[in-house]
Amino acid sequence: MCGIVGYTGKKNVTDILTGGLSSLEYRGYDSSGVAVIADGKTKVYKAEGKLQNLKDLLATKQEELKSANVGIGHIRWATHGIPNEINAHPHTSTCGKLAVVHNGIIENFKELREKLEAKGCVFKSETDTETVAHLVNLKYEETKDLKEAVRLASKELDGAYALCIIHEDVPNTIIATRRNAPLLIGVGEDENFAASDVPAIIEHTKKAIYLDDNQIAVLKPNSIELFDSNNNKISPKVELLPWEPIALSKMGYKHFMIKEIHEQPDVIRNFLSGKLHSANEPVKLDEVKLDKEKLKNLNRIQVVACGTSLHAAMVGKYVIEELCKIPVDVEASSEYIYRTTVTDEHTLVIGVSQSGETADTLTAVKQSKARGSHILIITNRPDSAMAREADSLIPVNAGIEVSVAATKSYVAQLMAFYALALHLAEIKDSADKDYIKTLKNELLLLPQKIELLLTKKEKIQKCARMYSSSKNFIFIARGMNYATALEGALKLKEISYINATGYPAGELKHGPIAMLDETLPVLSIMMNGKVYEKILSNAQEAKARNARMIALTDSLDEKLEDLFDYVLNVPHVNEIISPIMAIIPLQLLAYYIAEFLGKDVDQPRNLAKSVTVE
Ligand code: F6R
Image (cartoon, rainbow, N blue to C red):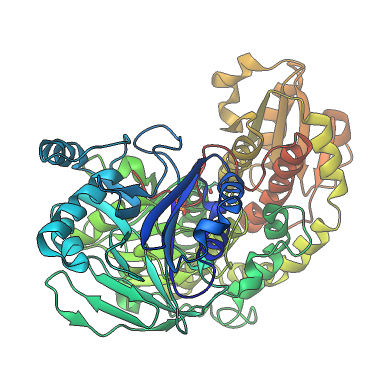
């Protein structure tokens, strides 16, 4: 959701800015823009729609951009004001000398705008960001010091922001600051960078400084100075970025999503390495920092998450309750934060987030932390804002996930829940030892079984073609695969825009059965185990209403061919592990349907990879 790149140095500024923005495209956006200082003047170029439109525009301006040596760029996901060229960033001060790009939301922008208009500032856009341009410029006119102007202005801003600012009177310089929105500084040789996320700079440098809230960085080609909000100079801590540029390549696949689906066996192996080597050894989860006594006496767990991460949490609830006998509540973060909740110092609160930046989950985690709960974060981004709130941190190490639709990060989050549940069960001695051993064995064998499944994807592809003209889908399941039904439906909705609903199979007869007819595909997730027979009879109810029947199963029962029009087989796994196995064909089904319909698979409309607004 929105992306920032800044560059000061001798290379072609617009190439670096647009290159950086390209690698942030996956986050979701609707317009883009850059501002540079060329021939001593601030120049701004913006375009609505795809980044290519901006690139095409800049290609026609190469002559006037030749002398540019500093610039800032942005891709915008509209919050205040429609997605058009005027509302696209960068925004400028009335004099046009100062330009700013911004991620986040300035909550008091209305009051600020009134004050600034009263002082003669002329606004062009409907955005909250433009207030920052005018406010900082007024402070600059008073102080003639751009860093000081940003520092004074930020004291008047409420809300979340990552900001990069240039001014034509201050050559070669970018001022960068942040509060509750990510921003990092890339450290180069005779050049420096600013970015809202690693992919934007990883091609150029692996050295970075993560800004803390309210810190201000002054970037010039040969220096980086860092200050706190009281103007004290701080020594920057340079870190080595764990990313490889190769992670951002499709490696021959048509889309990132299909590449990421294929990475899942390795994601599981990667997650297990160092944690589980053999079924005879205990799970090693040093990341959990609660001592054994506290873990033994834990009497409640609350999980907060959104979207796909919420579905991972729902599976986690089943697994932890089954193995550890600890009650687990799971709630959408956006609901949790606006009601009276009763989490306290006796509750373990788990925040689950691929990006670690989701605003609702971050707020939920902060609220729980303030009430004294131990905070455990499960995330793919150990460098994120959420990770910084953690008392215990489980990085899921899925590698960068570029496709907006989460796939491998979901499987990695599930792995984190299995590891946590097994770890707790071993400490509490709350589950049968042979059962635990079986589950560990199954987890260790899982990557090969998924690889086997991935070699047989043609059948799923064929199924996708057959059903791609359906306007609606129902996914039914029971038990821990109810979350799989929700996740399968979410994947299909997100990337194909087909209306899909996940339903607990037993609830079908309490309403949705009224919708069933010969046009509606009902996909039943029927993994062997406690509820297999139950779903089978729910599926029969659907068949009796002429629905188009699809089964997803690890059963080899040939009679299923009579009941179902299409049977998708997966290798058998223990029921408790089955949500990982069952989600793979559903990810593939959604992918192939969207691909067949010609949708923008990796960047579905209206969606953002990292949702940093509430
Ligand atoms: C679905 C998807 C979203 C995210 C949700 C939470 O494919 O990607 O539903 O799962 O926005 O994001 P994180 O996990 O980053 O907190």
